[in-house]
Image (cartoon, rainbow, N blue to C red):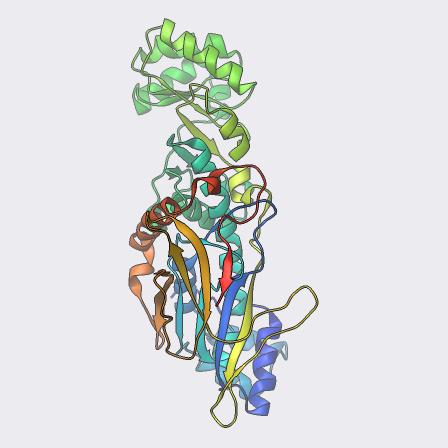
Length: 434
């Protein structure tokens, strides 16, 4: 039996439904939008990730006996509301940015059309998925840009919650990483996996040479040997002697990397291992990766920085009611006016304007009536995700993850060059409401 996702939510989502049912406003047709008010300080773009995961969680959003018993035992809602929850199935429509799309402040990347109770109960789930996954993808995309075509592996599972680790591996892959150390991400989402040995394997053996011989015997000379457990220079000499000049790669996990990498490359070449690659894995982020751009590094492994969003572990995304029908069936635009946290009322439709060369120049958000599509030459950013309660299944599983990775590459190719500068700056595209 599939595990329910229904209690991965905040209590007040259910108490709002409880009160709305009592008032009779729970079934008012409503429009909710998810967006971010700002990017993390100094960032120039963000990358949407989490869509495929969210759709699977919505599919499993069911209040079974165990969930209902918990709510009843803890007097969370009234008995009538428990009956409503027992029959809950999302029946509305969700449109949104395709996973892997770049996003900018103010533009709605997800639009939910549903009765109020059905739309509001998904708020916490929507935000918990997109805030984290998009934070990882946005940081990972910056690292991919800094790596300038050199492969990156995600290896941060030990620096994250066990569920977050799988989500992070998936998000990093969508953003352009090439592999992950996390096997569950490989099984569930089709992310390529990698990994050979840690320092413990070397320390297990009577000598470094014994450890290298054991690994080569098991994995072949094309394996990657970790060479900084003791003395790097001596380890490389041993590694090439054991594996031969066809040694696949050596890994460095410590030291002054720019200097050390140059020394290692020179030593490998002297020993005839000219094809042996160098991979580095020492507390990297986008800035240290960029600093190694002129070094003879062949690939990178990134852990803590990618699973924590490189200092911005959440994306600042919010979910707001922007319109609903009144008792007479007329649409009423609504918005909060809180100081510093205003929202813009009314249903919206975002497009991305491109110049004649196909480069993005602006994010344009049109205020529209229900069913309207703006008369704009920009690229339509909304894709159907759920229609009448039915999930568009092309977004799910390994295939959906692959599609998201491909879309991320095409969306990034539209951005102007200044988007990829690591220095602090404003969003590279303005958001225009019209």
